[in-house]
View 1: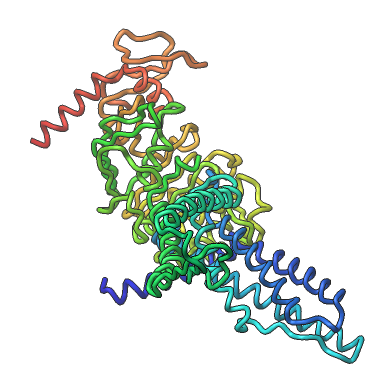
View 2: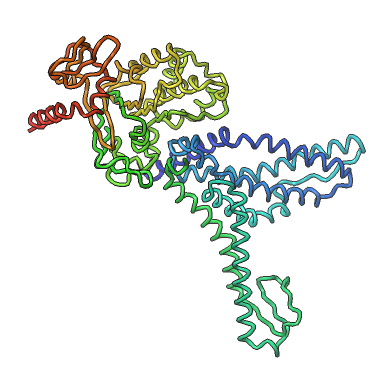
Length: 267
Length: 281
């Protein structure tokens, strides 16, 4: 089989896996959509015609952030169940196609779904308000700039919980949360020690106005009499590491883990 | 063809197989027999690539199962003892999963469903255990996969369904296929399975076709235990006896299994194997 034919058949199989996964494992998307629709509609009706775009954006942010973490945490739930693992292992598709299908369903598909739910809800709210008050409300614009701004953070969030789902057999959501908190604590302690070391070595008692460029001016500078700025390339490197390398790493790791998965490990 | 060579496998510290060797040829329905915990299901999982042997190699139609390549998985279907089916109608399951199997025969699936009394329009989650199993067995044969693995297929089937299953098995399997059936209920499939593989204590004790067995073993029911009996056991009508020599009576696989596992036929098999080796030379 030539490379082109192989890629073609892989794309066809990926489509089949996504379809099979959607209708056999992600049926909860429908009750989830209905629930979010009802809750957001109810809240928008309570707020009345004076509702602002910020209401939709803040609710959208909450739903999409919590939703992605929960949905990504359950991405490999079936793989760690003895009754379901056979289906995963024996489905005639490559492991990367199966993992990719879960990424597609728990990230882009989920984000599109939430955007659509909010758009439809805002239309209903508009129609309801127009009928009652002859005045419409604001409409949530899907994939607007304000909604897209969240995307890089969502990518990182998804990748972390997706990885957690492949690592933890039981309660992956809580275990991933705990791991992230512990990791941040360790980083915080290490960072504090490093900072203390830098401050000691650079004789701060005679300088003023410390600024760390990666904090974008949010860092506290009071009482520290020294100016410190990371070079721009360091900022860039940190951003690439955080928004590109980390998600790629966390998305790739489940593939290797699933490739070595055996039926007995799920038992 | 399935080739298992020098396979070693253990669950943690408990060794299950050591130096396991056998071949399975196309066009046969193999019966895999063994005591509880002998490793029948494990062996089927190793052949299917669901678990990996610690040592040795397994080859199925020239492919290594542990790689779980799509082409390999599309040419093998495994019906587990306790199968899971998603919450959807049978027809939807077929439309979602049949495209994965290039040789899927929809007509065969429909005819097998009607033979076994399965309504594919019914929701799979509303089906009983036996009906789910019949549905999956029909799906398995309709895939036309080269290797079909059935783990305890007659468990949960009612009496008419067992007869239908036997008919299905006889009519659906072609010369290019290998069917491996692991079962405790040998009486259900006695007439169908040929050759018979018996595993015990991590080894294949026997892997022989029925005609080969009937050349060296004679089965009979006797009132007294004959002196030349290789093996006997008490039955309601007297003694079920196995003697050396050509048999005329129908083989009793349950008695054969007991005899093989007890070690009573070890000499006979050694002799038969030596004869095969001499012929080969």
